[in-house]
Amino acid sequence: MADTSDTDVTAAWDRLTALPRPSLKDLFADAGRVAAMTTTLDLPGGSIRFDWSKTHLSPDHVAAFEALAAAAGFAQRRAALLAGERINVTEDRPVGHMAQRGQGDAAMVEEASALHARMRGLVAAIRGGTFGTVRHLIHIGIGGSALGPKLALDALARPDQADPDAGPAIAVEVVANIDGQALEEAFARCDPAATMIAVASKTFTTTETMTNAASALDWLKANGVADPYGRAVALTAAPDKAVEWGIDETRVLPFSESVGGRYSLWSSIGFPIALACGWDDFAEMLDGAAAMDRHFIEEDGAANVALRAAFADLYYTHLVGCQTRACFAYDERLRLLPSYLQQLEMESNGKRATLDGKPVTQPTAPITWGGVGTDAQHAVFQLLHQGTAVVPVDFIAAIIPGDTLDPVHHRNLLANCFGQGAALMAGKANADPARAYPGDRPSATMLCEDINPATLGALIAFHEHRTFANGVILGINSFDQFGVELGKEIAKSIGQGGGHFDTSTTALMKAAGIA
Ligand code: F6P
Image 1 (cartoon, rainbow, N blue to C red):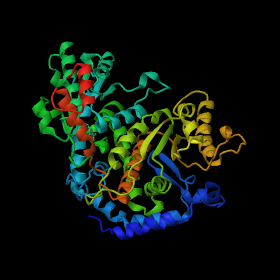
Image 2: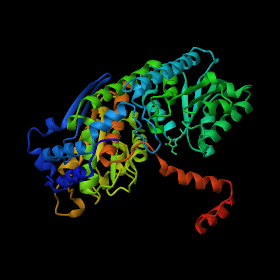
Image 3: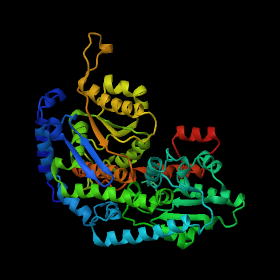
Image 4: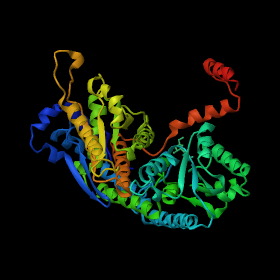
């Protein structure tokens, strides 16, 4: 475990709490503000500019947060992560998502690379016609086994606007919900004779996934596919269970137990990305993430963009009392990023116990929410500008447009993105309170040169590292998720029609006819 001292951490927080809190206007009086708080990283697919200048972190805050990170043992915990130490203490596991990108412990990297080679072989076989004509993949998984592939496919597997016929030859339907409507909608878009099924589950026990997988095979059978199991691929850290379930070992793509569900799109859970977009794109995503990993490993203090972002996150939750943070993607390709980040951040850091197993005494993760610009401006931005809750906002945009229409579209998109950040900061006085904007509201902007596999990989890795940095400073384990278990257990009892519940729940069961 990291060499930390509770006393040092408390003293560092006390120093932070005692610091004066400047307004953004005060901070921008320094002509060097933007340069000091902006870092542009040159990455394989193009640069990403991280502008944290419109946050309230003063130079004194940055220095005090750096001292806090040191007191919390950040450098040691990062080294332990990379060395493959069992930093997921409650589950007694190392944390292996960076190994998928070639970083850290040699044995873990070697295992990941061998499993990638196996996955690449199956992708090549399917794309090469070994399984006949395959035009659809129904990817069945939930949580981390769905959100990463869904985000990446939505961002990258888009029809080529210049050549609409050159889109991905294999269309992927990602189905998560146990509500059968989700699966039926997917069926309606697929030709059973040209469909394969990917069953994505780290544990290979998740009720939603196993129920949907069984129904998908039934659908194939009912529609004339003689050997439905022969059309199924398993993506899992429990290969024995997949084989036992009926999938031939040659189509089981394992990944390591050390890879957490919400960190798993880099492993065989990324199979649908590689299948639809091609292996090269998947490899570029890994490369982009690896470039971000190197930055995260090599830089210290606020020069490390993930750590700087974590400092701002903690400033707002701890010093201002913000209970939420928002992320708005000003790019349709990233429209699923907010929901991906919800799992990443809230499942990782929505905790109430410290690494030492004591109750936490400070707030942990805020609620992550967000949407797409400019849609969200006409729906929820009222609260950001004039509501009583202060919400730190991240804006994400790309310089190169994803569309081929009149450039007026993209110019206006960017103008709105930058305009919102400027308006939140500047505010506007008015004698009528209903028309006055308080201003001094924080935002950060990530401006990507382009959205492509590598920059998407880097953006996701940045958020993983930001989440880790927050968790280290909070002194919690970001890699377990016991909070989801109780609801699953109770749902299981209710589903089986048994158990004793509160009177409200019992009445609901009776009303729905499932008592
Ligand atoms: O219930 C939460 C969770 O365990 C997530 O952490 C995970 O991503 C998801 O369920 C799916 O789990 P699995 O991949 O094992 O089916």
